[in-house]
Image (cartoon, rainbow over all chains, first blue to last red; front, side, top):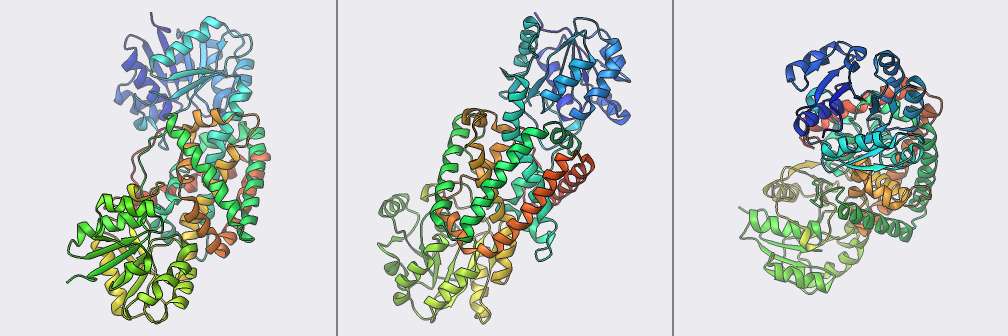
Amino acid sequence: MLPFARVAIIGMGLIGSSLARAVREAMPTVRLTVTDANAAVRERVAELGIADDVADGAGAAVVDADLVILCVPVGAMAEVAAEIGPELAPDTVVSDVGSVKESVLKVLGAALPGVHVIPAHPVAGTEKSGPDAGFSSLFKGRWCIITPPQRADEMMVERLSEFWRRLGAKVELMDAPHHDRVLAVTSHLPHLIAYSIVGTASDLEQVTKAEVIKYSAGGFRDFTRIAASDPVMWRDVFLNNREAVLELLGRFTEDLVALQRAIRWGEGDALESLFTRTRAIRRQVIDEGQDTDKPDFGR
Amino acid sequence: MLPFARVAIIGMGLIGSSLARAVREAMPTVRLTVTDANAAVRERVAELGIADDVADGAGAAVVDADLVILCVPVGAMAEVAAEIGPELAPDTVVSDVGSVKESVLKVLGAALPGVHVIPAHPVAGTEKSGPDAGFSSLFKGRWCIITPPQRADEMMVERLSEFWRRLGAKVELMDAPHHDRVLAVTSHLPHLIAYSIVGTASDLEQVTKAEVIKYSAGGFRDFTRIAASDPVMWRDVFLNNREAVLELLGRFTEDLVALQRAIRWGEGDALESLFTRTRAIRRQVIDEGQDTDKPDFGR
């Protein structure tokens, strides 16, 4: 039996459009209605033929759905919730794919009191954006973290879990604040730092931007990839996971300053010992299947 | 005509062993003698059969060579120079592959007054180390920056350039201090920051190391790859390019603190505008052929 029969997806960017494709492939009998705030995107999605219906607005899209997934930037959740609220049937599950969970739970919980709000976060994506960037295998073998509120309906949580498993994801339950702390480390801080260093590098006087780009294979290249991620999505992540990100940034800066001091005073042993420790962590990332061991070029 | 007929490579790690393989492939008639300070590495290189001779020491390796390339950590240059000095013929070209050039030029220039010291830096590598990690195509399509001293013999510089071009590299001449400033941005700072963030992440109390590794596909993963690079090599890079790295670190910290402030005060426009600017730089890295446009998974 299908976990859900009528699914609505709001927002057809990289994640929303990947989700539509994945649902089509894994559960072809699901009735799939999608929409996007941008008319050009709606038109493109209709051309791509990755949904049964492309609705004109979020309100129209959710009528009759038993699962609604919001694939919009975290900062747009409140507005979309206001639009869909009046159209939702009482037992509908409303979920999302945002990288921050506590604020989403708060916003959706308050705006949609009569339905099952069960936020989720598939830890998957690329640095690309838009409906053409999506692909059906995006969630295969990746984690999807579901963060149910304290009094969530267990059957609905299980149905949402099953939905994600059918798309190939591995499901983990977590409370929202802990999710936000974990992702602050594994995703938000790395993005912030990549954005920052790419900004710093493009503002120098003695080294030209052309040189930075030309010799970027030395390591910088990898930061540019991360720093090419969707600007609005990431703006909203930082504004909505402010506390965890700021706390972590404080620690990071502290550690970096210690490293700076070791370089200034020529403390080679301190440097070597850190660099040896971090190498071991790479080994564990590979053992856990979170990256391949294939060497990357450049540097 | 071959640019050099008898080449000696000192140090058989990732770069040295790649160089040996590449020379064999591109210039099979070159007489290739190699060595390494580590007896186990010498033995392994002999087994791999990637050189004509494996000498017992650096001094023995360079006898009769017309090109000597030091593929050792930057901090080991002085010691190796002292070993090979007495054995070098007067017109030998002595070069290297280190990521820092001003200090190498100074050390080798002072220790080896009678020969042609012409430092070089192939901007290529992977996060792997050791003779088994090398491969012959490592330098293909990558830049090799040659930093001749002011009164270098032009013919010898051209011969060294031709040598690298035959291995598939694109050659660029630069003065050593400028090289060090460019690489501080494109390579040294990214490595330092990756090492630092991986260290920070593995020291947290509220988020376990297992969780960090499990959800590393969100961005952290890419930092672990960079932070898996050779610890001794990188220790020496930071100790030998101290001024440029510290200056850049100061700027980076300044920019990061400004970003931190924007998050604290909810200045979404400032965040979005930086994130949009950095995205454009990614485009240029791809246009320059320094990375592929293939999206990466995770996040």
